[in-house]
Amino acid sequence: MIALDDLTCAHGAHPAIRHLTGRFAPGSLTAIVGPNGAGKTTLLRAIAGLHGETTGTITRGGRIAFLPQASTLERAFPLSCADVVAMGAYAASRLFGPAADRNRIAQALATVGLSGYATRLVGTLSGGQFQRLLFARLMLQDAPILLLDEPFANLDTSTTADLMRLLHQWHHAGRTVIAVLHDTVLVEREFPQALLLARDLIAWGSTDTTLTDANLCRARDHAAAWAAGTPPLRDAA
Amino acid sequence: MIHLLVDPFSLGFMRRALAGCLALAIAGPPLGVFLVLRRMSLMSDVLQHGILPGIAVGALVGGLSVYAMGLGGVLAGIAVALLAGALSRATGAREDSQLAGVYLLALASGVALLSARPGIDLAHLLFGSVLAVDDPALYLMAGVATLVLPALALIWRPLVLESFDPDFLRAEAGSGAAIHAAFLALVVLVVVSGFTALGTLMSVGLMMLPAIAARHWGETLAAQVASAVAIAVLSVLIGLLLSYHADLPAGPAIVLTTGTFWAIGLLAGPRFSLRQRLRASTAGMPRLRAGRD
Image 1 (cartoon, rainbow over the protein chains, first blue to last red):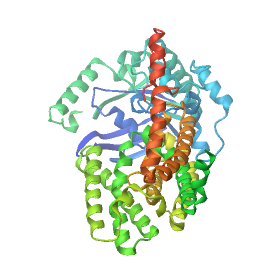
Image 2: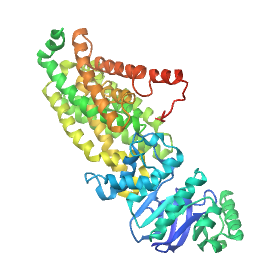
Image 3: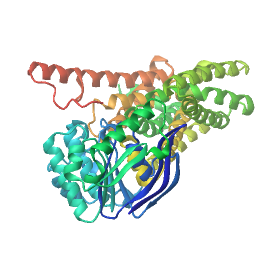
Image 4: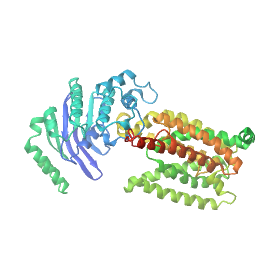
């Protein structure tokens, strides 16, 4: 479970998210959607504890595994795929603890379709293979709450389908899964819950009642008003 | 022939220089590999100039004591690294421009301060002299190496994580800033400890050049670190002999030897070399697995 109470996040003087209150139920599968600059990534980072300038409270009901946008990683760093998956065990092993079990690493690589890639350098992987690798790392983190920032950006449909299947498996195993996504068609098809954000909360609940045309239109207008420098009054939301 | 190789080291000062430089050759290159991979190569430039005012103040206050100058150098190095980072965060300027600005000022003020203290040979301070490796200087180099290697081993995992995926480390273990700061402190220690033998301008060379050359020899991180250390150790041996026989300052002699290993790697090394490129193009094949580093 994750509960937000009057959460406001800023980037310097500019609010990125205003007065957000609500909760992600335990075991829910939620997509965070909204126009560019709506504060989606900021919200996810705030929940992960990575955004410094926040007011209000965030209650986290368990350990969190965070999947950053793939573009923020240094892919030229000369690590093998097995090294990257082993990072998932860092919270347990820390500085000098035993390294992650080879079998678990091989199993995680096999699950994401990367059997035989253990010794390959990450710099030689395609974008899709790299994202599969990061999902394998998530498996080793073994956390009850998963936060994913644009997990399907720049992926082809078959990779997206494979990774989506993994998300459903984790969801069915009782984990709370929250993902920032752009593709509303994918969200309508695969995610039972959605949170529509345009710096202010537009709607939050089951996907069919959240991603209505009226709400999406309102989110667009809201974001445009912010971009034009005329922040809408809170009551308008 | 064997006399040419062995005889110089029958002299006490050559043995001290050898022992000290070998310590640096083992401690420095692993840090250099991380500097290169973290795209922080410019930081080494900044530090080699940045420590000079500290060394100068140390010399003014404590005389020509290695410890006084070393302590001043460490403080100045850390101050310069922190100042450039703070300036870029506070003003929104690019960090590399702030680093360039800070190190130029540090170099100028260092030289100005030193000129106020007669009796210091600026060339020795900048480029090193094997004759300057007295016992305190040797203890400094050996002591720093003894400290740096276990410390690097201690922060190895989070340092790799912070280099590859900083958000992941922050989410799993809180801030990565402490790891970054600890890493910089180790770099400063190594740069400062080498200044007596290699000079402030050249001691970075024994850290950076083997690391830059290692890219052509090693594929994984471990292989790059191992080849960087091997290149540095060989360069120290060959460089000191060159320095003795050709009457060159030790710093440039060692650094030039390291540069030779780099050139060999560029031309004929197993990775990203001219030879490999020629072979790929004559085979009519696109360069597979070219990597992106």
